[in-house]
Amino acid sequence: MAYEAGTLDATLAAAAGEDLQLFSELRQAFIDSLSRQVDLLRRARCDGNWQIAALRLKALAASFHADRLMLLAQEALEAAPGEPTVVRRIQAFLDDFANG
Image (cartoon, rainbow, N blue to C red; front, side, top):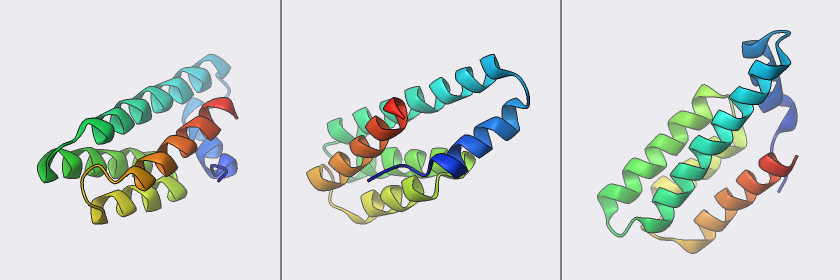
């Protein structure tokens, strides 16, 4: 599953303007935040913690116009806490973006 490079990178570029350093910082901030939410999902052992992590993930996706990630976050919201397939798909998104 490839992340939506065009939409997400366009959002970051619009925010950074011509500043390549700012673009890199925003990109890294997105990666760091996404990594934290994936970690929280992995460690969630109750409905409340899982829901909070999934909602934060959805908010992150919305703020960066990451449509695919928003769909994955919605999957997490509808899944049972700790659902490994959902976590793996979100991790794959993160890996694709971080390495892309």
